[in-house]
Image (cartoon, rainbow, N blue to C red):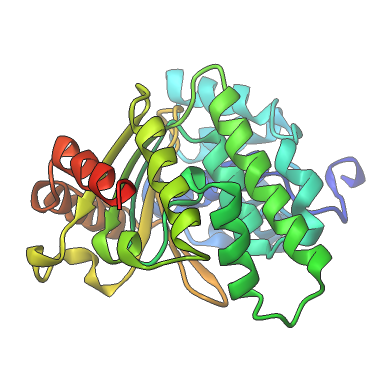
Length: 289
């Protein structure tokens, strides 16, 4: 058993597998933790550690769990194969000690995603920020309470995140809806903003980026309560996740009905926002000021 135990933090893939095993127990098998553990011949604590990603789980154990839950065929084979890859760590692990845990977890999920549907209220999406814009935002968020080295580490992590996105063999597809107020707010200086407008224009010209502006005249819409991102993964067995961030923490929404509600809200906002062409026209106008 000790061979699968570790004091290290779980990888993103281990967390994704753990989350899916828990979801299958609750939905496909409709079993409580104790009942499932008894039928597996495990302790309740062991299964709990597996479902939180604290304990590494072997592919054979995954097969055992899935058989109990009635999951078989291609779906079972895919999850067992995925279990063989869970120890892989990504580029973001080099920054985990200098980033908040919630944010580090998110960029790991983002790096493994197939697509992102994101609405942001106050700031340009992180994948689309210039270095100067990122620096000004990070300095503001840390509120001068942290040493300059912390700001530089955060900026370096953001740039590494963007580089990994752009250099991926199949870059994650980003659909970004940005509130108009974020474009009108001067971050740093007019020169910083002009560079930011031009950078978005360049990114929006690539095949994997769709950009829209939510205009002020749109009035009330589902996103007025805050920014959110729906994260979709390439593996069919992995459900979508919603990421909601605030100043001090983040929330991951995994409930299928709630995730579906956010997806429907994003679709409604796509219809309410300016068209991609009109959004880029607004950016070009701002950049000429």
